Length: 154
Image (cartoon, rainbow, N blue to C red; front, top):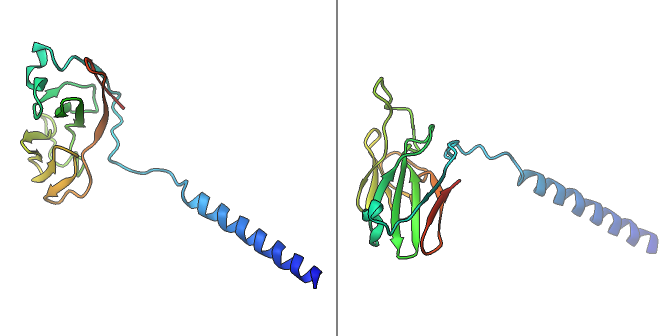
């Protein structure tokens, strides 16, 4: 009887280990999210300066220039101490409306961000799609504010 119990415990233990390994392995798949920008972004600004006057108030926004393949950055002041930073490259079919003059860039039309090519609309407060064919969020960068300077990085 004891021998049979040991075999059952051993079988359960091995099954548990195998199941755990399978579950862990399936959770570690490569992230194929095309919504991640490959642009290197490391920008520091003083949002309270006159140079960035539009950001001096909650609800203010502006466009910043960034290195390619970014098409620029939208910076939005959500609260007095919180900012959002989004790439102007559309997350859905980003190269759909490219021509010899360049490619489509997202534009701000408060309280939304719009893709004029696919006519997709996104919430400026969190980047989520609202209307149109886009089903992915805006490409968002990390925006860290220390009370004086705003750091935008990826």
